Length: 265
Image 1 (tube, rainbow, N blue to C red):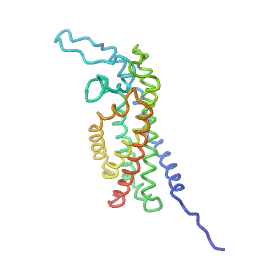
Image 2: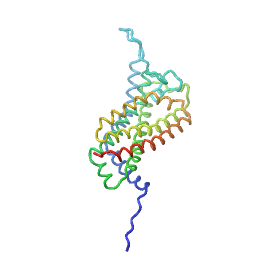
Image 3: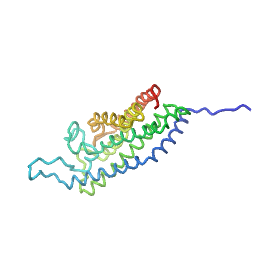
Image 4: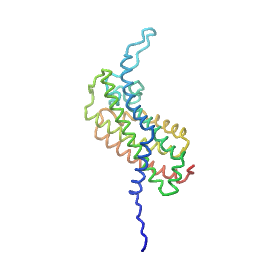
Protein backbone atom coordinates (compact mmCIF):
# COMPACT_ATOMS: atom_id res chain seq x y z
CA UNK A 1 0.00 0.00 0.00
CA UNK A 2 1.46 3.30 -1.10
CA UNK A 3 1.76 5.97 1.60
CA UNK A 4 0.18 9.33 0.87
CA UNK A 5 1.01 12.61 2.53
CA UNK A 6 -1.36 15.51 2.90
CA UNK A 7 -0.14 18.62 1.11
CA UNK A 8 0.35 21.49 3.51
CA UNK A 9 -1.01 24.60 1.81
CA UNK A 10 -0.28 28.15 2.96
CA UNK A 11 -3.75 28.33 4.53
CA UNK A 12 -3.21 25.16 6.58
CA UNK A 13 0.29 26.21 7.64
CA UNK A 14 -0.91 29.66 8.66
CA UNK A 15 -3.80 28.19 10.64
CA UNK A 16 -1.41 25.98 12.59
CA UNK A 17 1.00 28.86 13.14
CA UNK A 18 -1.82 31.11 14.38
CA UNK A 19 -2.91 28.54 16.95
CA UNK A 20 0.61 28.37 18.33
CA UNK A 21 1.14 32.14 18.31
CA UNK A 22 -2.20 32.96 19.93
CA UNK A 23 -1.48 30.43 22.66
CA UNK A 24 2.01 31.82 23.21
CA UNK A 25 0.86 35.45 23.12
CA UNK A 26 -1.94 35.01 25.64
CA UNK A 27 0.28 33.14 28.07
CA UNK A 28 2.62 36.14 28.24
CA UNK A 29 2.09 38.28 31.36
CA UNK A 30 3.11 41.33 29.31
CA UNK A 31 -0.10 41.17 27.27
CA UNK A 32 -2.29 41.45 30.37
CA UNK A 33 -0.06 44.13 31.89
CA UNK A 34 -0.33 46.28 28.76
CA UNK A 35 -4.10 45.70 28.56
CA UNK A 36 -4.46 46.80 32.21
CA UNK A 37 -2.25 49.85 31.60
CA UNK A 38 -4.30 50.71 28.50
CA UNK A 39 -7.44 50.67 30.65
CA UNK A 40 -6.00 52.53 33.64
CA UNK A 41 -4.02 55.18 31.75
CA UNK A 42 -6.95 57.29 30.46
CA UNK A 43 -8.69 57.10 33.84
CA UNK A 44 -5.62 58.46 35.61
CA UNK A 45 -4.95 61.09 32.94
CA UNK A 46 -8.50 62.46 32.86
CA UNK A 47 -9.09 62.34 36.61
CA UNK A 48 -5.70 63.82 37.56
CA UNK A 49 -5.78 66.62 34.99
CA UNK A 50 -9.33 67.52 36.06
CA UNK A 51 -8.26 67.66 39.70
CA UNK A 52 -5.28 69.88 38.81
CA UNK A 53 -7.55 72.33 37.06
CA UNK A 54 -6.44 74.90 34.51
CA UNK A 55 -5.64 77.85 36.73
CA UNK A 56 -2.31 79.74 36.37
CA UNK A 57 0.32 79.22 39.08
CA UNK A 58 -0.42 81.93 41.71
CA UNK A 59 3.22 82.12 42.85
CA UNK A 60 4.98 82.37 39.50
CA UNK A 61 2.15 83.60 37.35
CA UNK A 62 3.03 80.94 34.77
CA UNK A 63 0.33 80.24 32.22
CA UNK A 64 -1.74 77.15 32.95
CA UNK A 65 -1.28 74.05 30.83
CA UNK A 66 -4.01 73.25 28.33
CA UNK A 67 -6.35 70.78 30.01
CA UNK A 68 -8.93 68.37 28.66
CA UNK A 69 -12.22 70.19 28.16
CA UNK A 70 -14.17 67.10 27.10
CA UNK A 71 -13.80 63.33 27.16
CA UNK A 72 -13.29 62.92 23.42
CA UNK A 73 -9.96 64.78 23.48
CA UNK A 74 -8.52 61.67 25.13
CA UNK A 75 -9.42 59.74 21.99
CA UNK A 76 -8.27 62.12 19.26
CA UNK A 77 -8.65 65.66 17.92
CA UNK A 78 -10.96 67.23 15.35
CA UNK A 79 -9.42 67.59 11.90
CA UNK A 80 -8.67 71.28 11.37
CA UNK A 81 -9.14 72.05 15.08
CA UNK A 82 -6.74 73.87 17.39
CA UNK A 83 -5.29 70.66 18.84
CA UNK A 84 -4.87 68.93 15.49
CA UNK A 85 -1.86 68.88 13.20
CA UNK A 86 1.51 69.92 14.60
CA UNK A 87 0.43 71.32 18.00
CA UNK A 88 2.13 69.72 21.00
CA UNK A 89 -0.10 70.29 24.03
CA UNK A 90 -1.34 67.96 26.76
CA UNK A 91 -4.37 66.80 24.80
CA UNK A 92 -2.31 65.69 21.79
CA UNK A 93 0.47 64.05 23.79
CA UNK A 94 -1.65 62.15 26.35
CA UNK A 95 -4.35 60.53 24.25
CA UNK A 96 -5.09 57.19 22.60
CA UNK A 97 -2.16 57.58 20.22
CA UNK A 98 0.17 56.54 23.06
CA UNK A 99 -1.07 52.99 22.49
CA UNK A 100 1.07 52.72 19.36
CA UNK A 101 4.22 53.16 21.46
CA UNK A 102 3.04 50.44 23.85
CA UNK A 103 2.36 48.27 20.80
CA UNK A 104 6.03 48.67 19.81
CA UNK A 105 7.09 47.12 23.11
CA UNK A 106 4.65 44.24 22.71
CA UNK A 107 5.69 43.34 19.16
CA UNK A 108 9.44 43.62 19.82
CA UNK A 109 9.35 41.59 23.05
CA UNK A 110 7.13 38.91 21.50
CA UNK A 111 9.41 38.40 18.49
CA UNK A 112 12.61 38.76 20.48
CA UNK A 113 11.53 36.00 22.88
CA UNK A 114 11.26 33.61 19.93
CA UNK A 115 14.92 34.14 19.04
CA UNK A 116 16.21 34.23 22.62
CA UNK A 117 14.58 30.91 23.47
CA UNK A 118 15.66 29.23 20.24
CA UNK A 119 12.00 28.67 19.29
CA UNK A 120 12.34 30.53 15.98
CA UNK A 121 15.43 28.59 14.86
CA UNK A 122 13.81 25.28 15.74
CA UNK A 123 10.57 26.31 14.04
CA UNK A 124 12.21 27.26 10.75
CA UNK A 125 14.47 24.20 10.80
CA UNK A 126 11.72 21.68 11.43
CA UNK A 127 8.74 22.82 9.41
CA UNK A 128 7.38 26.34 9.19
CA UNK A 129 8.22 28.76 6.41
CA UNK A 130 9.21 32.30 7.31
CA UNK A 131 6.27 33.80 5.41
CA UNK A 132 3.89 31.88 7.70
CA UNK A 133 5.74 33.22 10.72
CA UNK A 134 5.55 36.85 9.54
CA UNK A 135 1.86 36.78 8.65
CA UNK A 136 0.95 34.95 11.84
CA UNK A 137 2.83 37.48 13.98
CA UNK A 138 1.14 40.35 12.10
CA UNK A 139 -2.35 38.97 12.72
CA UNK A 140 -1.77 38.08 16.39
CA UNK A 141 -0.14 41.44 17.20
CA UNK A 142 -2.96 43.25 15.36
CA UNK A 143 -5.53 41.52 17.57
CA UNK A 144 -3.61 42.47 20.71
CA UNK A 145 -3.22 46.06 19.49
CA UNK A 146 -6.96 46.27 18.81
CA UNK A 147 -7.65 45.05 22.35
CA UNK A 148 -5.40 47.79 23.73
CA UNK A 149 -7.26 50.44 21.70
CA UNK A 150 -10.62 49.18 22.94
CA UNK A 151 -9.42 49.02 26.56
CA UNK A 152 -8.21 52.63 26.32
CA UNK A 153 -11.58 53.72 24.92
CA UNK A 154 -13.45 52.03 27.79
CA UNK A 155 -11.05 53.56 30.31
CA UNK A 156 -11.52 57.01 28.77
CA UNK A 157 -15.29 56.77 29.09
CA UNK A 158 -15.01 55.76 32.75
CA UNK A 159 -12.31 58.35 33.48
CA UNK A 160 -14.37 61.10 31.87
CA UNK A 161 -17.41 60.16 33.93
CA UNK A 162 -15.38 60.11 37.17
CA UNK A 163 -13.70 63.42 36.34
CA UNK A 164 -17.00 65.04 35.46
CA UNK A 165 -15.90 65.98 31.95
CA UNK A 166 -18.60 66.66 29.36
CA UNK A 167 -19.38 64.20 26.57
CA UNK A 168 -20.55 66.95 24.22
CA UNK A 169 -19.62 66.58 20.55
CA UNK A 170 -18.49 69.80 18.88
CA UNK A 171 -17.51 69.55 15.24
CA UNK A 172 -18.16 65.83 15.00
CA UNK A 173 -20.88 63.22 15.46
CA UNK A 174 -21.24 59.77 17.00
CA UNK A 175 -20.66 58.33 13.54
CA UNK A 176 -17.37 60.20 13.39
CA UNK A 177 -16.28 58.67 16.71
CA UNK A 178 -17.09 55.17 15.44
CA UNK A 179 -15.14 55.83 12.23
CA UNK A 180 -12.28 57.28 14.29
CA UNK A 181 -12.12 54.18 16.48
CA UNK A 182 -12.15 51.80 13.51
CA UNK A 183 -9.48 53.91 11.78
CA UNK A 184 -7.23 53.69 14.85
CA UNK A 185 -7.74 49.93 15.02
CA UNK A 186 -6.92 49.43 11.32
CA UNK A 187 -3.90 51.73 11.69
CA UNK A 188 -2.53 49.18 14.16
CA UNK A 189 -1.67 46.95 11.19
CA UNK A 190 0.58 49.66 9.72
CA UNK A 191 2.55 50.00 12.94
CA UNK A 192 2.70 46.24 13.54
CA UNK A 193 4.22 45.74 10.08
CA UNK A 194 6.84 48.45 10.77
CA UNK A 195 7.69 47.16 14.24
CA UNK A 196 7.85 43.57 13.02
CA UNK A 197 10.41 44.55 10.40
CA UNK A 198 12.67 46.09 13.04
CA UNK A 199 12.15 43.06 15.28
CA UNK A 200 13.27 40.82 12.41
CA UNK A 201 16.39 42.95 11.99
CA UNK A 202 17.30 43.00 15.69
CA UNK A 203 16.12 39.46 16.52
CA UNK A 204 17.18 38.61 20.11
CA UNK A 205 18.40 42.17 20.78
CA UNK A 206 15.17 43.45 22.30
CA UNK A 207 16.61 46.84 23.24
CA UNK A 208 17.61 47.56 19.63
CA UNK A 209 14.26 46.61 18.13
CA UNK A 210 12.36 48.72 20.70
CA UNK A 211 14.68 51.68 20.14
CA UNK A 212 14.22 51.54 16.37
CA UNK A 213 10.46 50.98 16.62
CA UNK A 214 9.84 53.84 19.05
CA UNK A 215 12.08 56.14 17.00
CA UNK A 216 10.02 55.59 13.86
CA UNK A 217 6.81 55.70 15.92
CA UNK A 218 7.78 59.14 17.25
CA UNK A 219 8.46 60.32 13.70
CA UNK A 220 4.97 59.23 12.63
CA UNK A 221 3.23 60.39 15.84
CA UNK A 222 1.98 63.73 14.47
CA UNK A 223 0.54 62.01 11.38
CA UNK A 224 -1.85 59.86 13.41
CA UNK A 225 -4.38 62.65 14.26
CA UNK A 226 -4.66 63.52 10.55
CA UNK A 227 -5.43 59.90 9.66
CA UNK A 228 -7.78 59.23 12.59
CA UNK A 229 -9.59 62.47 13.58
CA UNK A 230 -12.75 62.59 15.69
CA UNK A 231 -14.67 63.79 12.63
CA UNK A 232 -13.44 60.82 10.62
CA UNK A 233 -15.52 59.53 7.74
CA UNK A 234 -15.89 56.23 5.94
CA UNK A 235 -13.01 57.39 3.71
CA UNK A 236 -10.64 57.43 6.71
CA UNK A 237 -11.67 53.88 7.58
CA UNK A 238 -11.07 52.68 4.02
CA UNK A 239 -7.71 54.49 3.81
CA UNK A 240 -6.39 53.02 7.06
CA UNK A 241 -7.72 49.57 6.16
CA UNK A 242 -6.09 49.68 2.72
CA UNK A 243 -2.91 51.17 4.16
CA UNK A 244 -2.76 48.44 6.76
CA UNK A 245 -3.13 45.77 4.10
CA UNK A 246 -0.44 47.31 1.89
CA UNK A 247 2.01 47.68 4.77
CA UNK A 248 1.30 44.14 6.01
CA UNK A 249 2.02 42.66 2.58
CA UNK A 250 4.86 45.00 1.59
CA UNK A 251 6.80 45.08 4.86
CA UNK A 252 5.84 41.45 5.48
CA UNK A 253 7.77 40.59 2.32
CA UNK A 254 10.70 42.70 3.55
CA UNK A 255 10.66 40.91 6.93
CA UNK A 256 10.56 37.57 5.12
CA UNK A 257 13.64 38.51 3.07
CA UNK A 258 15.47 39.70 6.21
CA UNK A 259 14.79 36.40 7.96
CA UNK A 260 15.88 34.47 4.84
CA UNK A 261 19.11 36.36 4.31
CA UNK A 262 20.32 36.76 7.90
CA UNK A 263 21.38 34.43 10.67
CA UNK A 264 18.67 33.26 13.07
CA UNK A 265 20.95 33.47 16.09
